[in-house]
Length: 419
Image (tube, rainbow, N blue to C red; front, side, top):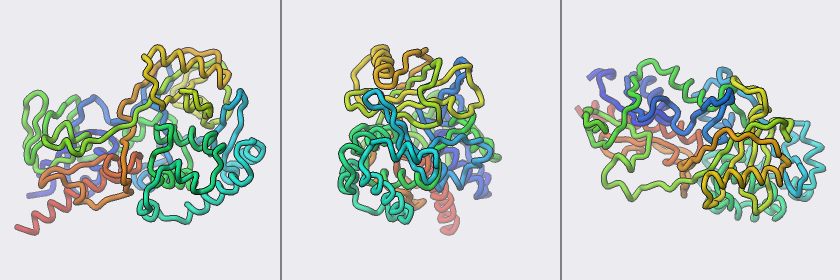
């Protein structure tokens, strides 16, 4: 059988599915992606409302991700860079802490911030140097502990943990207690230290759009829902059956594979609010953190502090909540607005949209950086992809898509060699 004659389906047009299609194309195959919605992207999407770009949740692209450097054309994304640090709102005062080695403008604000002791600042530099010298495979081979315990064991003071590390990494890990694996902390910290946090000028959605644009031999079935997958057969929600040689599940497989409930994934959620404001309380492209332990608001960012393809006349503010709250959407919005006034001095707010992201990040243990291609094999004709296999990151989504595609290629070669 010729390579282009193989019926290879990919379920899900998120990052993992798109990368899987690219790798299959590079190996001479012509896959078909089945997507339940009308567009690519999965959890990486951008809306435009009232002229403002709204990503589905506050997300940034870490340019040091190895898979990002391999699969994305950063120049075409027109990346806008955030300052390497954060402004912390505490007791009605703004204090900035950052990496002056990468942004000299942060030197004096960091030195005189009053956040953490001199010993803490020396330990931050020590941690930077340590992780720069540590390979990723070494990081993911270390025994796991919680990030909170890691920081304590490293010798950081309770003050800097509470004021900086907790709110900063709570916004990344989407949990406020820093129970996330120390492997993930070291990985993300290393990526921040070796590259930049950036936003594409047209929003995060241009990332999957760019990957799709480079696919030349992949067919798409949009607005097509899959009800079940078996070896050799895909059943669509409308009853149609597609015969397949191989399938890559780049979506939640538990909904599609019978008797696979033992591998169900838990998810972390978050709430993101977008507001228009008359005047930004942060004048530079830097993340704002609310350090008060009783606050629901975790972090804020002015998206208009960087260049955007589409922008209204005023400042666009995103606000992220990661704590459990038990409030209705309306009451949560009211609480968020009150906290923005109380902690950040933001009084002029016009609400635009709220995103309740139930499945924002997988809640995983025994985190891995990569895997062998055939480890993605679920059965003879079914392979899986997605960051749930490795760790909750865009980098992991890309790697898992690559590995699943290579698993299919390897399985085909094995079959051919057996003939």
